[in-house]
Length: 82
Image (tube, rainbow, N blue to C red; front, side, top):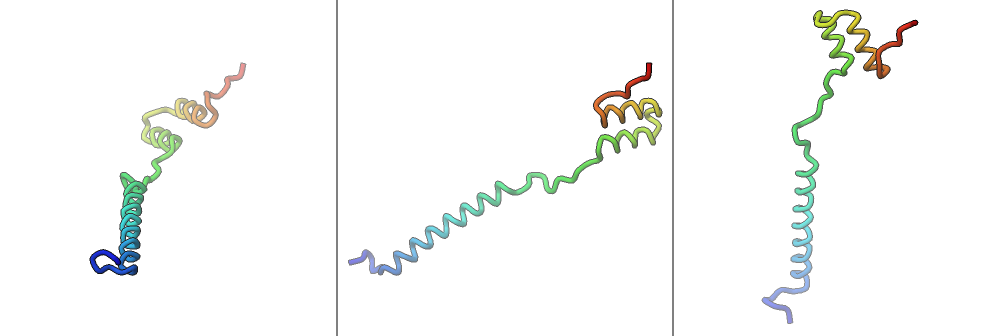
């Protein structure tokens, strides 16, 4: 009745094995696609921190520091009084 002496249980195990194999292939593919490309992303210093470092090193003076800080925080230089 069945081919090559395989019973109904043999066909069931073969079907489960095939489904299990393709499930493992799918899981491996998902694991590779979700893996971070360059390791964990560590946030760098903020623009304000970089500006403060330049000011501390003496690369910019206090007027330029406060003008750039205002630009970063408020979107433009401080308004001058008339």
